[in-house]
Image (tube, rainbow, N blue to C red; front, side, top):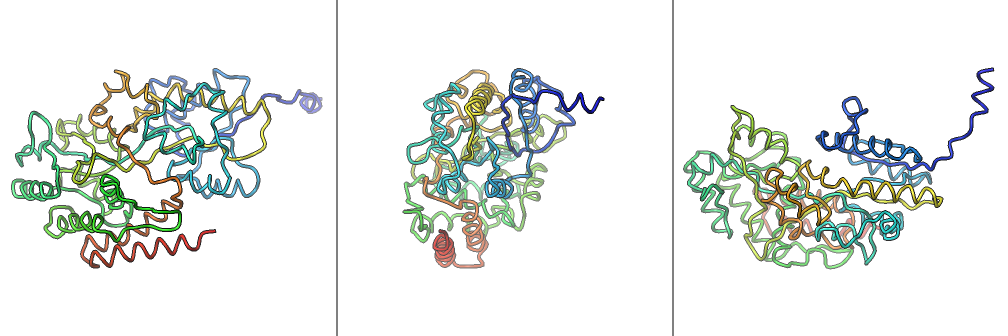
Amino acid sequence: MLLLLAGCAAPDQRPEIVVQRFFGECGVIHGGSTDVAAADTECGILTTLFNRFEAENPDIRLKVNVVAWPGYPQLAAQIAAGDPPDLVTMHQSVISDYQDRGLLEPMDGVLVEAGVDAATFTPAARAGVVKYGRVYAMPWDTIGRLFHINTRLMAQAGLMRDGKPVLPRSPDELLAQARQFKAATGKPYLVQAHVNAPDFHVALLYTYLLAQGDTIFPDARHVRLDTPAARQVVALFRQLHAEGLTTRNQDFPAATARFVQGGGGIFPVGTWMIGPYDAEAARPGSALYRSYAIAPFPRLWGQDAAFVDGHAWVMPRAARSRSERAAIARFLGFLARYNADWSRTGQLPAFQPVLETDSFRALPHRGDIVAIASTGTQLPEHVRRQSAIQGLIGEELEAAVTGIKPIDRALADAERRVNRLYAELP
């Protein structure tokens, strides 16, 4: 009888939206929480946001798929099977790969329905989601690399003024300050990851080429790296390595530990490390205790610029009912209202009004990096396979910086390898 009664239950008529995200799984900790302001970490804030949306919108079924970072192999399989999620977290640098093949829906209309005005995106966020005049994602943040600085060691080297680190404004100043720092502290000026970290030097190279207005990718099939400007940038970092002004033979975990333990002055790493390092700066006994500052990469050539990326919410192309699209719009509008909470993770907000609030600028160190939302620069919209390209270029830069290859040969080899990859693409 019970089975018969269960079989007669009315079907759930609510529209369902499937959201696929990375950032980890933490349902055990945050699974029942709806207090967004009390949540922390990327996983915790997102999980709590989803809980709150479900509590406030009982007429919508929200199904959440948590995938291992970065989740793109799973997404490719879902698209191939004709069953993609409705919304997916995606790096802005990856959007072109999917947009170019017609796998993403333009989101101009759904964002209007969500009450999200694309004109309120920060310049850096807008550059990451607009492709050929259409908006292909709702940006969620801007991420980039910064100078994370041990101010106690900088003071020991005489490189503090009015409570702020003195940073170089030219390649010659960088070398001079690095030598001064090592002479005073006995430690390397820079902490860097050279091993199994192909994107590390690529971010520096892109930043300083973009600052000079260099055209790195003249079209969708070619890269230009064997240039005087690129040779200058790589030569600087090769000199730092040759003189022992930077750490050597370290992967990212080793470099991270080295910086936290006070093993060097400046670690050029991402916005996502602000929270962990700020926590170290508040811990008595830490090498960073009350001795931590951050700053955008200094302007060594050209104008202020920062090579950035970001996370975004995209809609894979699929047939959806009117009620499903309305549910997606409501969910996007909900997320946009909480972008300020997401910025507590250390990433820059995607919306200019959030960036201008006193509450955002009151967060630790945010006033020091807010300019990146304007100076942040991404590669042109026609550049595909950015992650694979970074791997190829990074291998050659590592060889050049460590002296394994001459700089000219390494840059020429990087060009050749990237152009060969592009030649093989459909």
